[in-house]
Length: 432
Ligand code: NDP
Image (cartoon, rainbow, N blue to C red; front, side, top):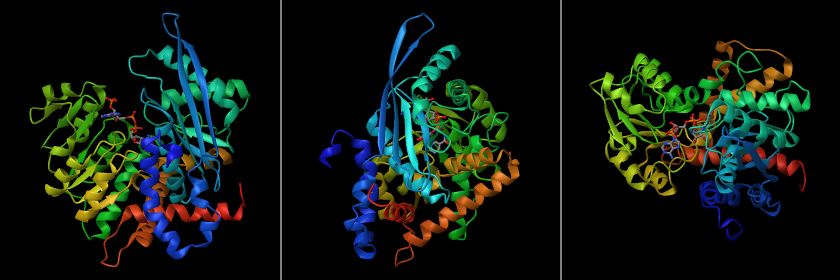
């Protein structure tokens, strides 16, 4: 613990996993103790940190820090997104990369775990500034990645536009059109359903949880946080499936609409950019709650889809007391450790991010397969495979997380289910 004392988010993510793994290993897999598999898994295979210098629109030099954490390549090339946000640091990227190893393993696809990004803040930057930053960032990153080495994707602050600029610079420097990034545009190597995949996959996972309890999603009230990529498509799929979505939010506040968003209302919200409160001028049933998160409003299902640690113990208590039965994480580690304890004590269904939001990286894996064989699959085919992958992840969680009283501890199931495959591969590949 002392080695990573300055990295609270990383320690939080590791603790969340090892609390389940240590008892399991002690009971079932003594062979992994001498091999120091866990000790090796918490140490990244490689961490790259680099200077990103670029010229802003006033011709002033700006300097940011870029990173790539190559966490584990036991079952495939490193795979995981790039995050551009001012609070990015090594602790946050190591937590995300560590989670990614388990998540990628759970998808059943041959992909290892990594994560990267920069403390660059895209908010308020012009399109040209974004492009110059991405080009400078990739000028260094290109020497460390490759279609069979490390395949980055998007995350907070990195969408199709940024992936485009990054890909353009990679191609220019390497003279090679290859699947080195996922989340590409549909006409230049991208996969159908990739933008929708994390949000849609989250809802497919929720459907599996409901099915398992012989319930249906129709008519259920759902609170969603965030209004970015994951939140938007989670809301879209939830509405399509007949649920009532009552909140969306961003760092400025929460929109609460007790009538529920329709697809048309959602589209309108999407067109507002970050000024969510303008929504209330068009829809009288709605209200804007500045600087507040959505967890004060009663719901059946909560889907945190914004960022880490956005549900604390107090929020979790409120959710449980007001009758919330499912929390499924679209974001990575949105629940604090104390919040998770409250869900598990109350025996509600808790789908951790590494299981519930794995749909995004799963379709990224499918994008890699399509690039490798020079094909593009139909949206129906990709969506079908996404659904199957989420169903399999749910099955794995049930298999390893079912407690004697029948309660499914999805967190434990995901931790153990994700771990075994990676541990076996590390064992087979010797001391590296
Ligand atoms: P986006 O940048 O598209 O959207 C992020 C959203 O979250 C925005 O609405 C943003 O609001 C809000 N947000 C960010 N930080 C905060 C904060 N501190 N407080 C309140 N709201 C905040 O990112 P994504 O939708 O891609 O990612 C969201 C989460 O999902 C992240 O945890 C990410 O790691 C995870 N994830 C994403 C995947 C993907 O495929 N994109 C895959 C798996 C997980 P604002 O604009 O005001 O900052």
